[in-house]
Length: 593
Image (cartoon, rainbow, N blue to C red; front, top):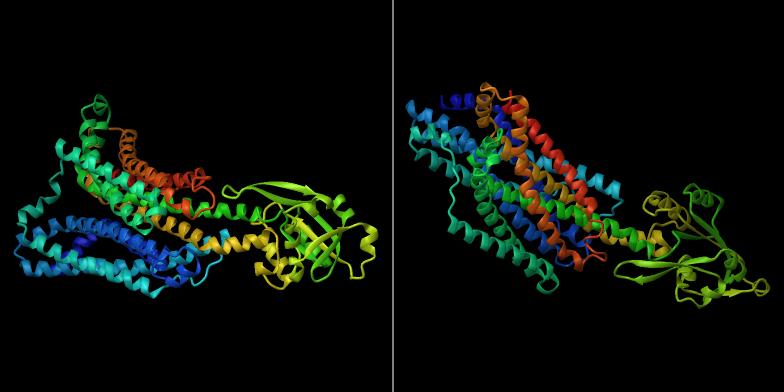
């Protein structure tokens, strides 16, 4: 009988259960996506030269576990709030507490295990989709990456099932020891914020000091090494929560005292935010951390991606050099619409390559002269034969030779002296496209056709350097972009779940406003402002965290981690705005029926 009553309650509140399930599924899916990288040691070792990257991922796992713990705790409290009234009614009609306890336990476990299993499957599908998009669009080279990784699935299942076992026990003890009347009216008790100046001042001071220590440790990671990451993890998480807990409560109470709170529905909006203020501070702290992780990861990933062509460009002014290019290969070069194409005739021994000086006087050979290796700035120098013979950068010409000729010494002769040489004449064709990355598919095809390999050790030029650098940074670039997308999805899941989980309870308040003559435009404005606050506050904190957190990557990035930072910030702002618009659209449909 109790089971039938429980199922009736489930059908009645299917929309709330859908919000709960979708949130838990996304949470477990994102956790699996992270663990698919964090637990795959072969992938981490083969795709990055940073020795402590495995330990960095372990710190990330700890942080994500903390976030998951808070998230499941909130999801469980949401599940509990939906069922308190039902269980109170069961008690009033004479149901035994032991039976209700069993029902609570089973329901919590059923929700948790089902959502986790589906989440792992969704996470696997997302891992496949996201990885393929990144690999194809960015031209990445990865080794030992697997979308389905059994240790990651086991870690996700054990964590979530374990947390829901604890949650089920908590629910059993909480509901069976609470009087029936209190259960019936539990959702009608507002959580009113109260100012405690001394306590809040202490929280603000401790929070600011904690975050300052975290920022300092990230900026001095070269000195602190791995310990700096651990310090930052603890202090920034603690400081973020303390500041939100102290300032947000104070802000809501203080704003009500200003005159603008009496205009329109501003007072109603502030009351809405105040109603569940304590829960908001916990969730907003999580969202701020996820915001920082997502934006930081995407920024770093794009930073590695942007420095790859820069590092390739300082190696040589030409994309590739072909010795004795065939008619087919010349057609392939022409199809790429190369900016510069030149052909130099030469005769070679094992140790010396002889060129005609007149050809270099007619078609000067361009070399790259680096001004500042840290900033990857350089000058292009156009050399005739005399300048190239004396130049320290003439090795760039020999890079474009293949085989043993790459290490030979160049010598430039007059036409008469060159004609006296007995060695057979050969041709070196060099060319430059407008963008190596844009033409990487065509360059790859050309390298296979001419050199019968795509190994960059077998040929020189910008494309060979691009392959080497791309192979070195692909893992880091992929990790940054992949985790950034995963954390962004987790952020959206947390924030949307928090907002939409209270939509059903808010519905009657908006109905009352509608009945007293409030226009639909005013109601939409109140919703927009309320949800905007919940998006803007963690966004501001997250941006500050990212700006300081990028200091960590100075030790592993050739260029400044702040170079081109506006682009990932702009992209992220667009995605964040999209999530905001989706959230208010769904929220409106629920509360403004």
